[in-house]
Figure 1 (cartoon, rainbow, N blue to C red):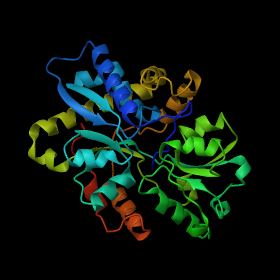
Figure 2 (tube, helix red, strand yellow):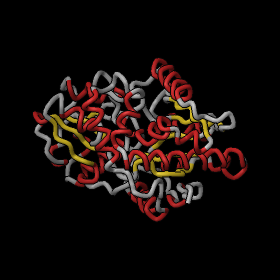
Figure 3 (cartoon, rainbow, N blue to C red):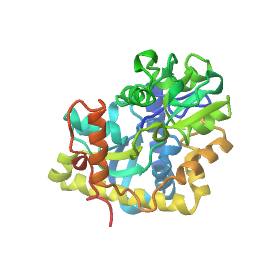
Figure 4 (tube, rainbow, N blue to C red):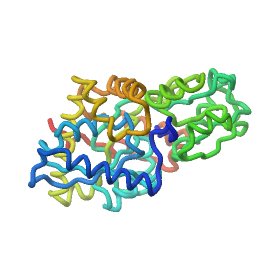
Length: 339
């Protein structure tokens, strides 16, 4: 569900003005490097959820191999100024598309933002609680009296509270500081016993190479399954602007091709991530992360079940993650996927 921020060698996403500039430069390099980009390609602005990292492997494989160009779109990839930007920017029409999360998309819909999920990018839960081995945390029952650092997404604190209650732990006994992009440092320096929001395919691999850790996937702690990363669009623009709708469909066609290439040729996917993720990971660690991520991709790109979204939205409302009830089925659509 969210993203566990990191950056020092371990970090995948350092936000702020420097990161935004880097993202714009990377997007520009990607476009220049692709000699196959047609002059008739339609521009699409994609806002990431965090700095480029292996969770974005499908996107960068599509960019690297020319799949977007072949689909007729010229994709500019940007980093957000903060972790909550995606839904707001898409709702306001400042970004064509964005990478977000199923829980946070539902929260955005409940808040009245104009967003809809048009494809599952990572169709399974990645969010984990990662604890230092020396913290003594081996299950949710061990969280009493501990400090669990969060990255600031709206869904995180209620999720930890739910996990605690399910394990008969009083959430009030858990300290949950919001450390934004410093989850890794909070754990490495011992300022937190554990972090919540880290991903098992990213931090789970990287942190294990730094200190002894215990990785507890959120679904093993009692949370229901959901799509970790999704692509969100503006539903009003989809119905009122044929040009926008066409760009979205073409983008998803290119993204589907990128996923197919990543699944068939994981080494190509690793190569595609090397420039975007440069400076974040060493080559061997990046390769392990990318291949771990590719193994989690669905055989059929992007498909989402409205009934699953409805069930998850109901669970969120019942457990305090949504202030108001939301029809989750209306927060997602497969209409723009290439059949």
